[in-house]
Length: 113
Image (cartoon, rainbow, N blue to C red):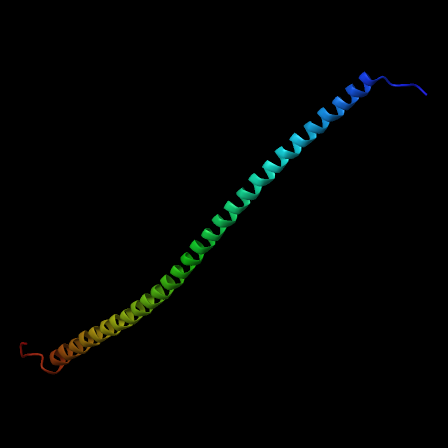
């Protein structure tokens, strides 16, 4: 067997220690990045919860708005029906007046109005 001098063993040991230190530093960096990712995820979850609450509020308001609009359209339909009835009543009044005037002219042609 060959013998390895102490200097070579020390160089190999130093090389292994330097590589080990590099690995440890790399792991520390990864650990910090993981910690930062966890913080970012926590912030995103908080933001998502806030957005969900806002969305629920908007949905609630839209439901209330929909009910209000439905009620107003119902009132509008009722008003249109009332106006339609008024219109036909006015037309019937004009028609009966016209029939009355025509009847007067037919039955009493010489007398003025």
